[in-house]
Image (cartoon, rainbow, N blue to C red; front, side, top):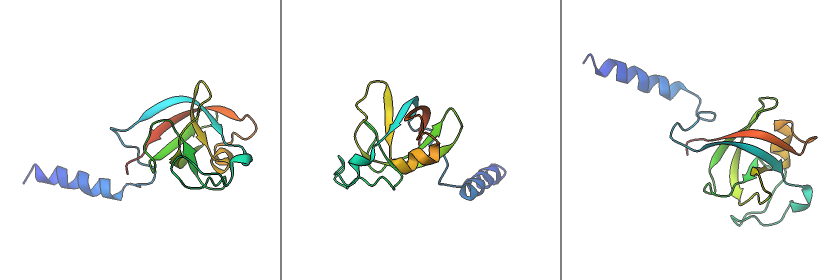
Amino acid sequence: MRRALPILLLVLLAGCASRDQAVDPSGYRSEGQASYYSSRHHGRRTASGERFDMHALTAAHRSLPFGSKVKVTNLNNQRSVVVRINDRGPYARGRIIDVSRKAAERLGMLGSGVTPVRLERLPD
């Protein structure tokens, strides 16, 4: 019984934690450069088959599974956004993610176009 109480408390506390920002401790984490899709891609099909919506919080990544949720943090201003992976890319050297225009707005990177970021995969 003495061992069960601390475990029960941990389970209860974990259940109270916010799920939308909880980083998967065993998940993917990376740092590099992010860019964003131009508006000319709006409406085109993505690699997942859905149409690209520049007003949605989505992104392209080379290897993470479609549907993965990723927390993207702009390392210049510490602003973060959670995006869903629905496309492949980026193909520009040195970049690790392409985010939608909406995500770029929230990250504060519209002026620069490219910014250093940290990616952290969230639990499914």
